[in-house]
Length: 280
Figure 1 (cartoon, rainbow, N blue to C red):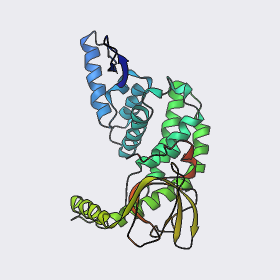
Figure 2: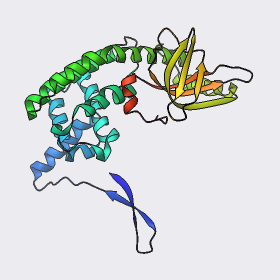
Figure 3: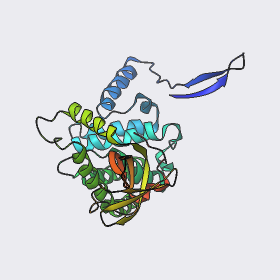
Figure 4: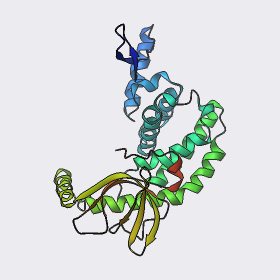
């Protein structure tokens, strides 16, 4: 659904809701719709996906290996991209999903959705699943995306793995007991919130790593273009050009800022697509 504004008879703005209906004229059609809803719910696709071209294809792909967890996770991310990120700007067919579509998916959207994992092999799994899906899609609908995706996957792998590694390191910095069987996430989040009160100043945003000076990372806010010197980022894993979304803070009397909350880590290639405001 999409909300917009239109004027009523009094000239005031009113919300306009765009809705889609799924025709069900026979009991079999009704049964098929509910089966599709059940399957699509397993990878979190919003119901609106059923009325668009991609919904049936994602469901068909899921049906071939319903118990494959790597495939399911890939479909979850792709469905979220199609229904949440693109919303009503989604291309009207697979044929119209050009290079910028796949670049945005790989470099911008996927890094925003990397799962935290002690094995840190989520990027590898994602790229394998992406190529499998594209090979299947080309055969099913007659597109010719596999050569493009194979090229992007090869080029993106090192940068995405670097982002995954840094994200996992920062996550464990915030939540050091995360992999312990006795981890209490609510307690850790409460402690993280309390730690934030020590900062006299804080700034949330999307920052580009523009340089490094020994153990200090120099970050530039993509919105304000202000520069911040951040001392406590793991400099061995921070790469120039990375896009870091999060919150920084500075204590009274300190010259340097501290990295406080992590939201996402994107490679440099995402700069074209990433919003310049913090998106959680």
